[in-house]
Every structure is written in C-alpha cells, then in structure tokens.
Image (cartoon, rainbow, N blue to C red; front, side, top):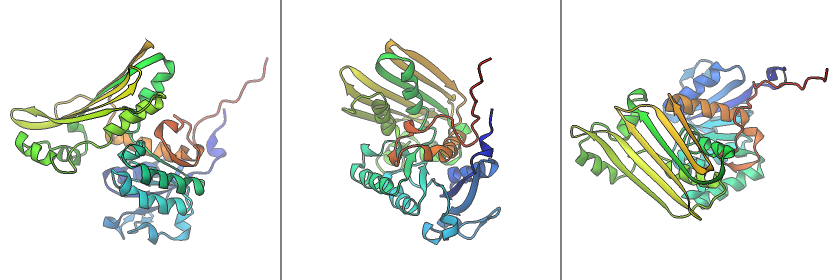
Length: 325
C-alpha cells in the first residue's frame, strides 16, 4: 500500500463566501493535511485575519500569488446567475470551481443559456465547475443514482428525507418560516426566499443519471404545523420520465423531526436503502472539501455531481497488485 501524500501535493484552495457553510468549509480545509487554504474572499469580512489568512473583499483583490491555486470553493448564492460571474472570474484565473449553489447540481433546468455560457468558458480554459453538497448533491440525487448500478430494469426512483431542524444552524429554521402562524407563512411563501432550494434540480438529476428524459414535472411546498404554529416545511418534487418511469422526492424539515433518509428503487431487481444521522451542514462541508480534492479528475466544463469520484481524494490509499506466489 502506498501513501498518496508522498505522491501528490496538497490541493491549494481559495474559499469564496464565509457564511456558516463557507467558514465551516474553510475550517475543514485547514484541518486536513491534503488541503491548503491560500486565500479567502468575503466583502462582509474584508480585513479580518483567519489564522494566517487575511480576508479580501473581492476576487479582483486577490494577488497573482493567491490566484496560483487549484480550486475555489464558492459558498455564496443559491441560483446559477448569483454565482456565474464569480465562477467565470475564477475559471479565467485558472481555477476549478466547486460550489454549494443548490441550482448548480443541474443548472440547465432553469438557466440553460447562462449554464451553456459558463460551460463554454470552463471548457475553453480546461477547468471544471460543479455544484455539490448533501442535498442537493448527495442524499436525494447522487446516492440514488449510485444505487441504480445494482438494479435491473429500474422503473421509479423514490426518496424521502426527514431532517431534524433542531440540529441545524439557526438560520435554517428562520429561512423555512418556523415560528410563524400558518397565515404568516402563507404570506411569506408568496414572496422569494422561503423554503429549501434545489429539490427540483435533484429530481431532474436523478432522471438524467438514470438515462431517462426530464419530462413533465411538478413541485409543491407546504408548512408542517403543530398547535397552530409552523414547525417545519414539506416539499415534493416529481418528474415524469416517460415510458412509465418516474422520480419522486419528498423532503420534510421539522423541529420535531428525525434525521433519516430512505431511497427506494422500483425495478425488476430493485433496492431499498436507509441512511440515518446524515447531518446536513457537516455533510455539506464534507462534500465540498472532498469535491475540491477530486474535481481536477473530471473533464473540463460545467459538470454534474454524479460525475465526481466517490472517494478518491489526494489521500486515498492505492493497493498495489501482489506478485503471484
């Protein structure tokens, strides 16, 4: 067995966006021996010192030495237009881009033109861009697509994810309208910003990963209520993939919830999988940092998280074939 640390230098990372997830990703990069943080960007924290790193306010302020990195982890917006400009700047500077942007897991669903433009820039510069996290980016899309490989003639993909909001960062219950009356929640639901982002993209990614078409789709969102007060949210996204095939994803966040995920593949030889204890914030950080270590292995362009190697980072052990006795 050989240690790849002897063969590969640490992945040099720039962290862009230092909110709860971005800062946690930076801390995880610092903790790991196979990753080196060379710069951090956040206009709200410009001038702060994070260990040996001084935060700058914009990508344009990064020096040539700081831009001599491998990957940027971008934890800023949730929509493709919100991150596309920064991603393009970083690509043109020679970096791969890994982002927590939820819509980036299947960006062509809503933003085909912007996605095609970003894809063209990435291909022209020989760099890859990918969106990932735990959801979207693993539990409700990547994991079921991986499960398809042990199925025969799959017909339907169903995933239910239940999340205990009491274990998540405080900003998330507020974003989901926890504590509102039903009437207040409904008023907020009519505007932007309320709810989880990316469930429809996950459903489309499941269909694409199965080799199916992305046909007619539906989405619904409603409050989870107890004693007249909103304690969570329920969302359902479905895709009719044609020829009797379908994808159905149900996501429930609740202050009285339980962290459990169930994946069911209906097939001639199907499979059911249950995951417990997947902590959304920590798992998202793990996915982002893992993606940063492997993104250089995928082809240039705007890629999908189902294309990332499962576990083959810079520190992965390589088992050498044994000589015949």
